[in-house]
Picture 1 (cartoon, helix red, strand yellow):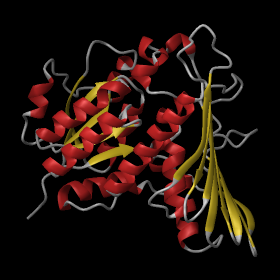
Picture 2 (tube, rainbow, N blue to C red):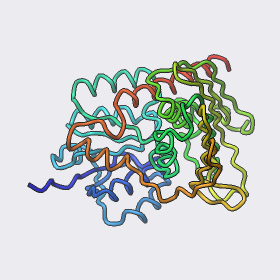
Picture 3 (cartoon, rainbow, N blue to C red):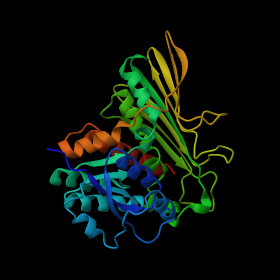
Picture 4 (cartoon, one colour):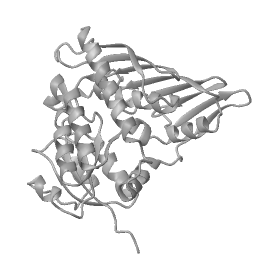
Length: 337
């Protein structure tokens, strides 16, 4: 019997990451059944351009009550994501949420309880791994043993601030969650994944506002140090991307192994601005690889998981642990400000 197409809906368009979430699910055969958002966020014009004809509903309960919708995508204001995810799971939907998946430990505990109670999937789209082809290539090389045992990752997540386009919630810490809860969740995910760690300690965390005194609740710089039984990690995130860079940030990841290293220049290999550049150095190879054609398996795997009730895209335990550690790092940094 032919499997029916997966149908998905979107709740909340407050962050541009909804564009990638929806486009990638369409690319693996998902049908975009409809969307709901509060008000008219500044992402709306870009959304309409990318997804013309997808119906908007005024009452989200119409989407939640639709038995043909399997998956709900969420990119609402970060502080509102947990409640929407729990509501969707209670209506029998699996969930893919933009990072951060939630902004407080209380929210995370409620999400864990909802997952246990409903049996639904709660997945955070860590786009700096799941939507970046060169990370797929790096994972393949690491799994092949190209650099030996991974003992450290160094993740850098600079972002362009674009102050004039930012909504009010971007400057309210209670609403966006803090820079480590938000951006650094990407790098925590990559540390756990590449070192093969299921748990780790946050040994250092700081956050500050150095460049935006007019927005005192905005944290524009943050860093974290991590340690597990398998390796060490350092993370730096910021909102300082300069205007000359042709994209939103020169995100990089260095993976150090006992027999070599890999450096990923994800979005800009200065000065030519090439994306998905991978540098591999080991005992027999010293080369630059264009990894732009590597696949993005997370989305197909998530579709399969929804159908088969498996955990091939990302284990639920890993998703919970990344979120927990981001919240722990944020709390530690805040306690020192």
